[in-house]
Image (tube, rainbow over all chains, first blue to last red; front, side):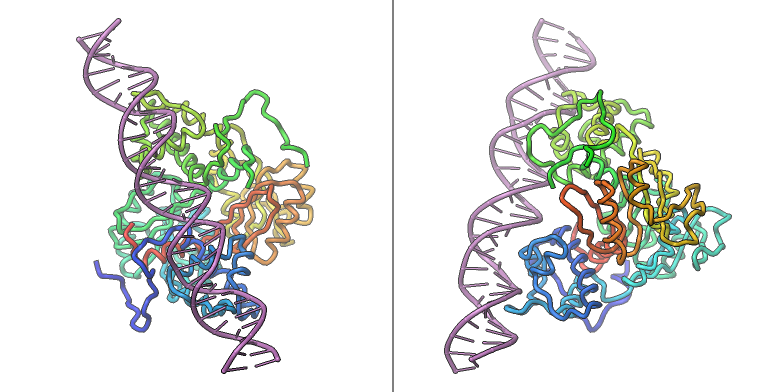
Length: 227
Length: 227
DNA sequence: AACTGTATGTGAACAGTTTCACAAACCAAA
DNA sequence: TTTGGTTTGTGAAACTGTTCACATACAGTT
């Protein structure tokens, strides 16, 4: 029940100004801005306006400014935003001013894809542990990672200070494994199991169902709703 | 510019009752209901109330009923919904009363995971084609699929009546490939490239960025917003 | 130092979504 | 056939998120 592992001493974290909860869509867009600002930084762009930021993502300038305004005033009137400064600010807001330890559970199709996913380390996520329950896989090397026995899940998660768990197992064992993960004190789970996952209120789950993503598109195809 | 390939002759498709656009969240939840109803059907459950349907997904009963009411009245007052009937109705709404031809572009980490993804055929999606630009991969067998040369992309997509494309390539070539896909007449794309994708208004894109999914969780971790 | 042009930050208006609350409808039992 | 218990379907209310529009502030120029 320790507060949060390491504590940043130097940084006064940027918090929402008022007490109102920030919407999911705003957080999602902040990620988007952060990603785009990275591209712009590589291009050598120094300054960007909310108009440009919006157009590149098919949003509105007002939307961009409003999103940012929840956390402070980062721009310069008449000029726009400094690409690198804004990127740093957003990184701070969404917690990308540090690295995160990740464990992947399940070395099937999706699990092993994520282990080798080069984008993760680039974005601040280090896959430190990999689990499976298959004796043939345990101990073997998967894309440079030694596969651990899921029977040691709780202990290993604790010992390695894992912040985030990616769950890539079938639906049937998913809830049971999640209970173990929660017992180990992990507060954030990204699940690819196509089933509902139940956790205590202080644990955050994000569920990704690949088929559901496609189903969203099939709905659009059969209904042709004007964008 | 052909309207849509095959046309269902027998089914009078369920459309929203009024002209108002149905919200993304409603469509997403319909998928959720459909998935859950599948589980209930396997369990042998015959009838379900909006209350049960809601509790199993941490939603509210009113939400469930409102979502369904956009498309018609499928329940029986005092009793609830027939599991199998409701599942069929929702399948019809989101276009799961038929099978869909899918092509995967890019046989890297994510691409090859999706090719072997067993959930897809179970949910109505058949991966028919797989592309890459790497000469060492072209012609080889990847999880039972022959890898095609991306240079034949447009022709192959057309010839095989592909409905949906899954894009699993790096950001840099993504937009160019999408333009090809659009030129082939494909109207729906699920992209895993971590960059913005631009398409004409009659083409639907859904972008999945694995790192952004994790970033959503890191925001929650550093801000601990009360759920 | 004053002026011009531009882009931010933000209350207020608007639009969209969720929840509420209840009449209507049905099942089952007597 | 009537009654009691239950759950739907849905307008209206409440809430949340987006867009508007403009005062404010700054950069750059003269």
